Image (cartoon, rainbow, N blue to C red):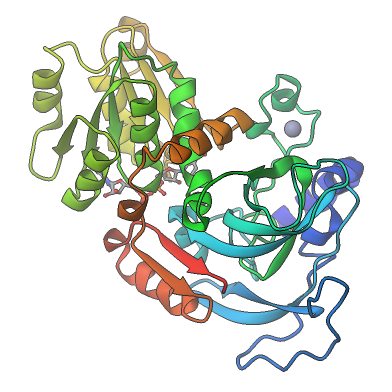
Length: 393
Ligand SMILES: NC(=O)c1ccc[n+]([C@@H]2O[C@H](COP(=O)([O-])OP(=O)(O)OC[C@H]3O[C@@H](n4cnc5c(N)ncnc54)[C@H](O)[C@@H]3O)[C@@H](O)[C@H]2O)c1
Ligand SMILES: [Zn+2]
Ligand SMILES: [Zn+2]
């Protein structure tokens, strides 16, 4: 209830911005009311439109916590500043799993997930000739208001009123979507690679926040989907990286992505191993990509004097700190959220240079019909899955 009124109020205040940044076609409340809610899908009842599409699309919908299904939804509506995309693949990460389980306070049900996307342009933009029909692209799933404190400082990735596709608004797990042209990134990549761009940008942004250079040794706490992007970004900048996780398979993937060393904290003592690897100084930068109180604390405990700590993980409970360490070590402690256009461009460049083990980062690729079952199986056994991708054709 609270969040509903919050949204109404924000929309009332910022209506022109919402419509400017995300056109009507992506609004769950206005453009895409579900038409049916159970399988099997009804046959198309409307004639194909101008672009050869029917006016009713299939979408993966999170119906309620723990339940996803395929539904028919209305065709999205475009605007002159937007581009019509045929969705080709959608990736699911830890945040989607949280949404599926009903543990993301920003997600209300029903919700179409999907913020990691590869797509093909169906109708290009009049404003940008580079975005022409037939081009394979990825996109930034974030929105920004343009006027809040973060936007005014040129940091729209942390916009106070951000709405991410698949989180606060319906996402890309459907056949066609309409997206503002400035959020689209064409690239010379495969559909699988395009779908990996967004999850990798989160780590690239954190590494930029930590001002990582080739002189640095960086410890990455958590080598899941997000931590893997941190490892790759550190490698891209020539830094020495130490991957830390409790799962050998995640650490193997981190090694394949460029980690020089790995520490399995289920078997090894973190402090002792970091001491050995850094001649007793501690890492210059520690980047937390898990979200637990103990790893939040470990970051400030293990980092070198005058080092930098970057937090990506969202802790789900309050964290108690020995704040003396902040002062005594004179630390830079930074948060990192989402990503900027330059992070998208850097990730695309890295993937175009084939510097990332794409296949190692993906656990399975499923069809849309298989996706509800795949999400349920992931929820039942979260540690066994790295990334699930859903292909749309
Ligand atoms: N700041 C942002 O913009 C942003 C964006 C996406 C995700 N996140 C957050 O980043 C965090 C990581 O997301 P993810 O998708 O990579 O999750 P994930 O579940 O894929 O990865 C977490 C990793 O941490 C490891 N791990 C768990 N407990 C550990 C422990 N005690 N010690 C060492 N390793 C441990 C797991 O084995 C796993 O490999 C989450 O908190 C998520 O909410 C933040
Ligand atoms: Zn994601
Ligand atoms: Zn803003």
